[in-house]
Length: 405
Image (tube, rainbow, N blue to C red; front, top):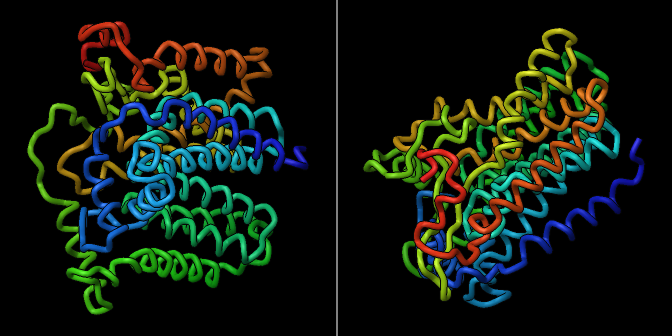
């Protein structure tokens, strides 16, 4: 049993942060959706008026905080994203520890999270998804902690984190329902779980606290110099956001269907152009060893749950499956691989759990997968980190399939 996880958690945070901060200012230009969110953050600093109103404010507030600390520079735009990425690594480590109570699978979870490619790319760009996932991953860890030892403050904090996640992107809203369903199922199966939390009061707190937290993230909008938000417009404004979220968009070269994302059929280039004195590229792609291996593991978790009724296998499999299944019902006219970002992180949990089980048959299989993921990370690093490339055709070195181009 890992009794003192805090020192390891701090070490993991520092390691991840050092990795994300290296060459953070490259490129010195806005990349991909930074062109939307950095100007919106500038507008929040000035309180000049609404900008990028199809998304809630919190992610842009955090970008604005980074700019306020480090200036309107690449580091200022992206610094808070690095913190979100490091928090995600620690939260995944904590969740694995709470599930298994052991060091090895917990460290394997953290390592695979860090080596999965998507976290590295999203932790070095000023987008909303990284902030949303950091709050989600933290909420999941606190839900798991509450399941083990109870405590209203842990449950309330999990609810606050879920509300903050929704305050970054609406994609987090279904996870509030996921938390409620998980609480209901686990509590009814064994009333000793979530000790001290009665069923209906806990669900009421979850809904009320997460909703109030979400609405609180709109506070800066009440102080705009132009078109300030009012209490009377707060709910109608949500409807305006919904209309923008569901509008039909023109066809895009990098669009893809949700069912293709786990298979790595159509990744997306965030950057491929001459900048900072060289041709550079940033490819959002999941680590094949982790993404494809995770699919096998997720199936293994479902089979293991059906055969043995293991609640930890059910939780791991349903989290990833639910995170992907959201996109089968969300009314979006276009899909892109970066929508898979939360699932690409959550798939690490079933993979780590199954690797821990498979070690009984194949010695050190978990270390082999981590080593393979590390080799692939080094191989792909130039097109994950905006490294200098030799020429315009250099990208072909990393294009395993024609659909990756």
